[in-house]
Length: 325
Image 1 (spheres, rainbow, N blue to C red):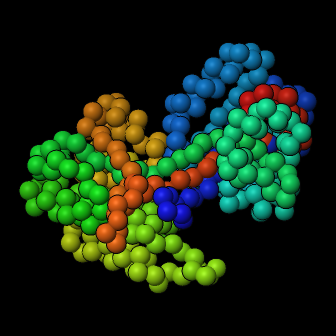
Image 2: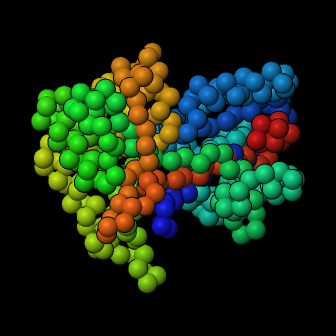
Image 3: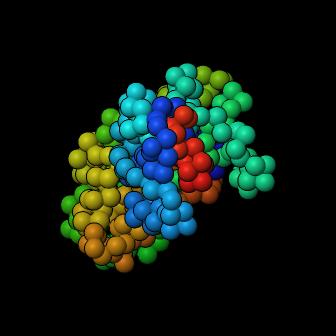
């Protein structure tokens, strides 16, 4: 974590998987995406439809899974041959493992210098492992603090919180006025979701996990983050179901009007504002997570994640796959 943001490199690489296929499947590309990415499923389907319109000889078969299932789906596809995936979205923490098993294709020679220069170096570097370019950066996702504008207005809250303690204070006002039973909802299931929320809070208190090159979870900021989490549960401000929730559960609870505040990735914004799937459409506010500590005000805290797309080699769909990426 630097002074302004805590980075989670979640590779949304478009990658080519190393599988064996036949020429008969040359015009069909099997692509695996995750559901809670910055782009919604509808966004990706629209992009795909546009791609197919421009390339009528290529058919894209899309599959969407939660992030928690993405890794195992990719690994399982290794032995699927022509029935496996040609293009996958993957997390930037997986290249070492995937490279060990030769799951991803080196696309270094297929990316023109001019195209590389269009991508921020920091993002491009996340797809490079031991000199091999394993895909293309797909999205830079960010966790924001969402709030229900109608609830805050009803509670008489006019100023947005600038510290996490102020978030709790505002939540208590909302709860005491009977506006909603649990003003806060989080994704604290025993999964990556919990780590992301916790990291956001630690950084919001000005902390970092590494001290003198070693991991340290006992810093003042780390302890403040855990204390805030427990306090919010003890005081009935955070929905107790947060301990079992993943990001989609948070989206559904917030969209149903069951929370005034929620921490989630950017994909939630459009969905929570869609009247077809949200009861709070039009009342969705969004802001960077608050960050003020030790008498100093800093930029809002956000947890960022880069995702990449990559292809699995020898799929028999090479030209079509590279066109899609």
